[in-house]
Image 1: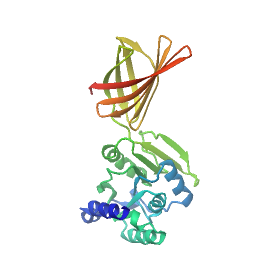
Image 2 (image 1 turned 30 degrees about the vertical axis):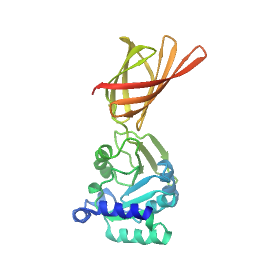
Image 3 (image 1 turned 45 degrees about the horizontal axis):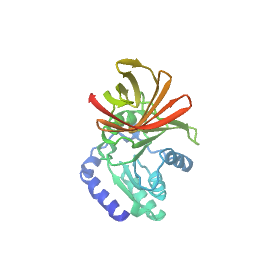
Image 4 (image 1 turned 90 degrees about the horizontal axis):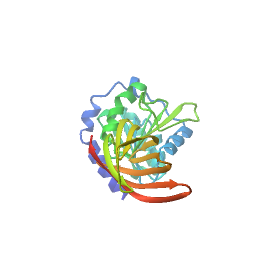
Length: 273
């Protein structure tokens, strides 16, 4: 099954690959080859929660170490590298590691690569490369997909997690956020609610009303498609949890008051963007 998937990916992604490889970016300034230490490779894959069922793409895959390690965790893994000899070296290493049927290595420009189906993308680029790649990641990846970067961040796009790697450098995780900006309406306890969300990457600024009365949001969190909103109205705490799908958010709300708690279904509809 994985052999079929790998072959299909190779055929799909190699379309136009030759042309992309003929117009390389300045690799030395964007993605110089600096091999990641084995411990850092493991930390990056741990941070991205890479495992069976994932489709992992390493943009600027170098000698293939990250791709091979991801395949050994059960992922279907794909490396993109502008340096032809490193691509051949990676393929040989994958055969030696026994994961050739779970890996694809392409000689291709990372900025011309279709990575839209990936569940996890890893990068080790210079700040210039991250800045150039950031809008492509946000545009092409599905909400909930994970991006892990070694050493360098994404400027004003704050990471969802940031840890120190064993080599002393920073490791960053972003979860692609759903686009939830706009005005939402819903009902809870037969009362009309309105939620206005302004969005900057995964950061949300809420304006909440119930029956025309302005409320204060105690907590608002967006991670991928998952939204959490907590507010207290007249001593009653409402904790909304939902998953965003287009113009709908569906989930449940926990309603707590004086030691009593109940759970109701919750559905919000976006009426304006």
